[in-house]
Image (cartoon, rainbow, N blue to C red):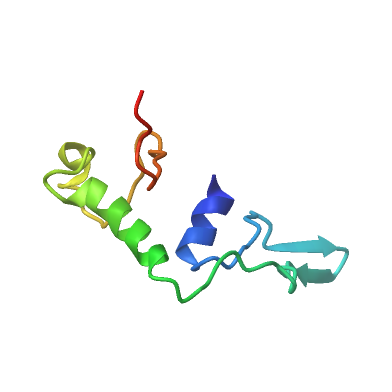
Length: 96
C-alpha cells in the first residue's frame, strides 16, 4: 500500500519504500541509495494523478467527504482513502 501511495504522490514514478538510512561496518558508513532504474507507471503529466489526490484530500476535508467528521479539525492537512474503489464501465448496460 505504501508503494502504491508513493507512486501516486510522485505522478507514477515508482520508488521502493524503506527504513534504512545507512549501513555501518567498522568505521565505514554507507548511505542507502535508491536504485536508479525504477519504472515510471503511466504518463507523469496526466491530469488523473491530481484528480485522485484531490479526491483523497476531499475525503477528509470536504463536508461531503466520508472522513470529514473525523479529520476536518486535525491540526495538519490530511488526505485519505476509505472503502474500496468503484468498478464501472462506460459501456451501456445490456438489456436483461
